[in-house]
Every structure is written in C-alpha cells, then in structure tokens.
Length: 212
Image 1 (spheres, rainbow, N blue to C red):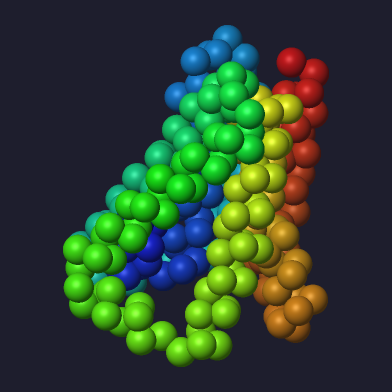
Image 2 (tube, rainbow, N blue to C red):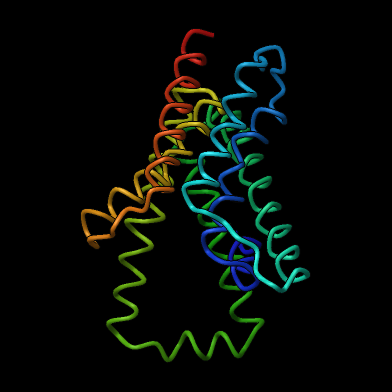
C-alpha cells in the first residue's frame, strides 16, 4: 500500500519487512471466528514474528522520530493488509474470484491514475519515462502484481483467511532463497536462524489449521 512505501522513506527496508510481516497476528486477532484462536497458535504467531526479526535483523537508526513514523506507517499497512485478507475471503466466497480480483484491481488502477493526474509533477515524470523503463514496469505489473493477485484470490477461495496469512508469511523465505540462487547472496547466520524459526512455526500453524 501507499503507507508501506511512504514508511520506507523513514526506515530501512529490513525494518519495514519485519514490521509488515506481523500481519498474520492481526488476521488472527481481527478474525470473527475467535473460538479457533488458541494459546498455541498465538505463541507460534509471535515466534514467527520473532523469527522474521532475527532473519532481517531490524535496527533503529539515530532518528527516533522518523523511525517511529515509519514503523507506524508500515504497521498501518500491515493492519490494512490483514483486513483485506479477511474480507476478501468473505467476498470471494460469494462471487467469482476472477470478478473480485478484476474489480479491486481496476478500482486501484483508476485511483492511482487520478492521483497521478492530480499531482502534475508525478504525472509529468511518468510521461517522460524511457521505453526500457516502461517495459520493465509492465513486466513487474504483470508477473509481480496481476498474476499473484489472481493466484491469491483463487487460494482464498479454498482456504481460510488465517491459513492464507500464515502461508503468505513464507514470502521472506522464498525471497531469501531466490536472492541466493539468482543474485548469489551470501547468507548471514541471523538469516539462517530466522529462516529455520519461521519455517518451523509456519509448518506447525499450517498443521493446526488443517486439523481445526
């Protein structure tokens, strides 16, 4: 969301990632089916967050006010994402996942275009982008936004919102693996420890939700 990107202006990407991926906690807390939230699930969710914190090693800089603003903005983004997962599950249960995804993406596109038009400076910058940059943006939009959005909607049709949030928390692990394979990233010890903790907690949560 926009709050997430604005938050990146105030805090580091590692701290942003750790805060953003606390959203499974909010899915559990905001879920209407509170009877399925057990103590063991809460412990595993908290452990997942701690694992992510170790994995990305978030550290606050010397600008305390800026850091707090950034954390609050990313936290707001995480809460909105949790709400989206919960209510999109309800919507997809009543209508086609394709219609749902197409509708919210069209609405988002229109709002963003209006924002660009209103802000003439950004609109002018966008209109002067080079061809290879536009191709790159189109590639990112299709393979990193449109297709994943449809896959998410199809998945929500078949599993509950809490399980969807837990599975989504595997994102940092997948990102780390691709970083090693594609960009030859050298893993640090804290990343390995964090990855083990997150993977173990997500696996346990998945089994608990499958049995519920």
